[in-house]
Image 1: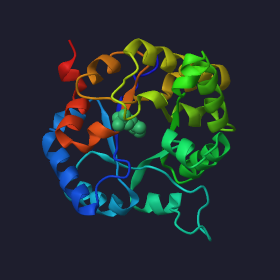
Image 2 (image 1 turned 135 degrees about the vertical axis):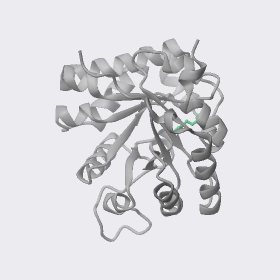
Image 3 (image 1 turned 90 degrees about the vertical axis):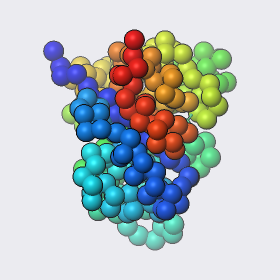
Length: 261
Ligand code: 13P
């Protein structure tokens, strides 16, 4: 039997909180969580780039077992790329997880699977873990093309990665129609797609990779729906947007087990 996958609950702050607000938020979150709350769950927060150093300082000073994450990265290590941030820069700030291919980056900034793949490789080269996002639009779901879309995103975004690398990755299934809309995929639909993703990983990278890869669900995860989503066998965590801005709500999501019936 492979070891159980530790759920990863990640807060994606998106373009919210200046560095003063970030300090307040991380302090409140650290206060809202007890040491034993981290026993069976990994937690990461993904502030904007300008907040990373401030949040890192708070986490280190108080020895808080929350991992620091970023929301994006440039695929090159350095160079003439005005306005961009590289993986070595993030690594120096003790960043552990980097979101790549978020649907907002794919939709609003034209990121392709090929680019997401290059970013994932850049993150891995600095010994950090990419959180690779995939997910379909409402139109694609209605047309019965959701599974095919996700399959091509998984294949393209993870192209060329070795099985042991894929086994250590985090994937996030975020149906675009459920992001910031208050609409959540039903836990059955989310489970079905996460199982589909795990099957795809198994077919392309083998059983160990499929057993090891952690698959998060994202899209209007709230304290009220987290326990049911997390109870699904192929959902190994949550990528939380709006609700992660409220430290109490996010702490309740981290503690989803306490609310499971
Ligand atoms: P919401 O939780 O606000 O729907 O955002 C989900 C998301 O995009 C996390 O990356």
